[in-house]
Length: 78
Image (cartoon, rainbow, N blue to C red; front, side):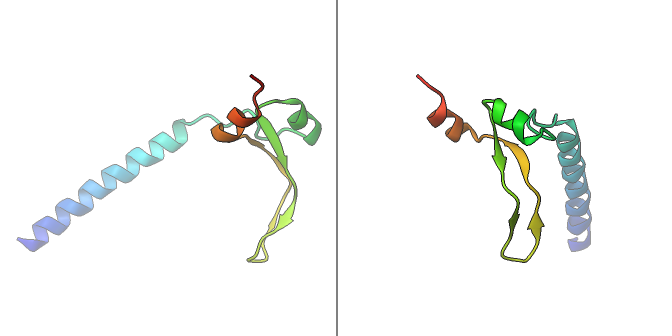
């Protein structure tokens, strides 16, 4: 009986993983991805992240990111 339960759990877990992959693939990339620094600064919904070295020693390149919703609300003029 326990073996059947384990098999059912394994099969249902694979279905969930497949759905998660489909959702991730269906997302469109942000409008800020791949913009140069000047283009990023000119776009109101994007901001520029400087290059940095993380605590783990890994280096992060400078890149453009979309502002979080809470940050955009604070900056948006009323």
